[in-house]
Length: 111
Length: 114
Image (cartoon, rainbow over all chains, first blue to last red; front, side, top):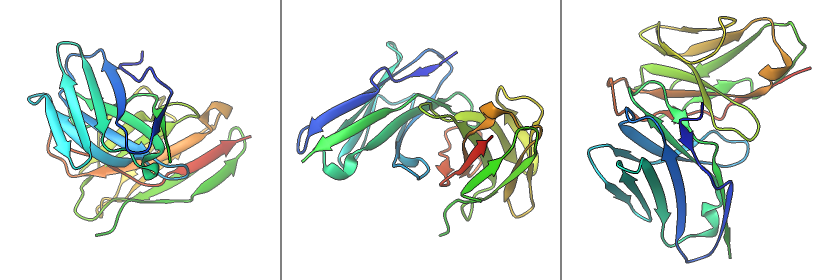
């Protein structure tokens, strides 16, 4: 039972343009959401998070949007850079201990 | 500030054997969570330890067990290894808040079961 879904396995974007990564969830009890970036042979690196009491959170080039009614969140990267090429995972938790992860989206930023 | 470290980085075992994986949490963190990541999948929660007690468990059989030590480091033990246990095992540490905490991951241990 996949409670967090990333339906796009891969995404290619030109350098300097916007990257939009999407994530859907089914559990209405989720109240904290995170995005992680993962390079090969490394563990996931925390990028940005958002609490369910907000609908937007920004950190530099990264912005996460949360639409609770649609059970949807997205990560915007502007402008995209070649170093952003990695696999991106969204994660959600209802309690703070058990995190549910999506299957990841592989982002390629083309120079 | 020291990040999350895991050992060993790679391991090869045969079916039926037992394995112990180790994790040192980030300084200042008191909670350790373990995840299994199969190829092409996202990390799957195994369990979490807080104050040396199990604080939540995912859908994994009892042959997956763990320990947390007073210095907040942790071990994951897997008995009677099966071929499907081949995966990347990730450890994540956090500062327990009850909700809204961020978990920080180590580089993982890649286990291959033959």
